[in-house]
Amino acid sequence: MTNINLEKQHAANAAAMLIKNGMTVGLGTGSTVDYFLKALAKRVQRENLQIVGVTTSFKTAKSAQDLGIKIIDIDDAPMIDLTIDGADEIDAHMNGIKGGGAAFLMEKIVAKNSKRIVWIVDSQKVHVKLGMVPLPVEVVPFGSGKLMAELTKHQLHPTWRKSNDELVVTDMGHYIIDLSLKSIDQPYELERYLDGQIGIVEHGLFLDVVDEIIIGTATGVERLL
Ligand code: 5RP
Image (cartoon, rainbow, N blue to C red; front, side, top):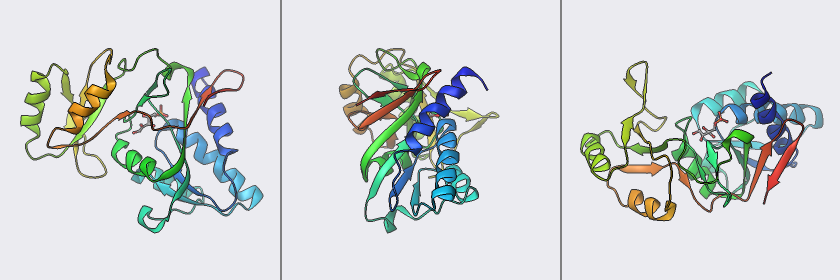
């Protein structure tokens, strides 16, 4: 296992220990969350934990169910007790960029409806400022070319997210535009601008959202609270 995967696994294992009997658990998306799902499934089996999961993507729903974790619809969950999710980048203020796995719209809806949110990351995700990774925005296909032109005019360096030369379509049927910003000096101002654009359904800036971040290290974990 590579060092990074070991770090992811350490963070994931620590997060699995936070789950208590009876909880409704928000299940994020990504490779770090995949380790978490495996660790959680082991606890569910060994300790006969009675928990249910609320998913943030079709992929996570399938992985969780394959591992024996029961999934319920978000609208059937009165409240999500704790959500465990990954992130693409975090800064010292515990803000982050998410969406590398194209699931950030569902992730934000689950986060909004969670009592507590914990992110699990490897040490390479920690940066002084946000922006070293592309910031994704999820857009309605209709008029998305116009939106692309607006984002270009606003000097946000947008590119369509593609896979095998095809536009990526999210679980909710939208396109993704990635903004290559290098450094985000005023994240709240950028958030206000993106929130104000018709046709942008959501963006991957997660400001003042998370309660705890577990950073995996070579030997264990560090926590930001
Ligand atoms: C998906 C996400 C993921 O949490 C993020 O991309 C981190 O993924 P990984 O754990 O594979 O590094 O935001 O939309």
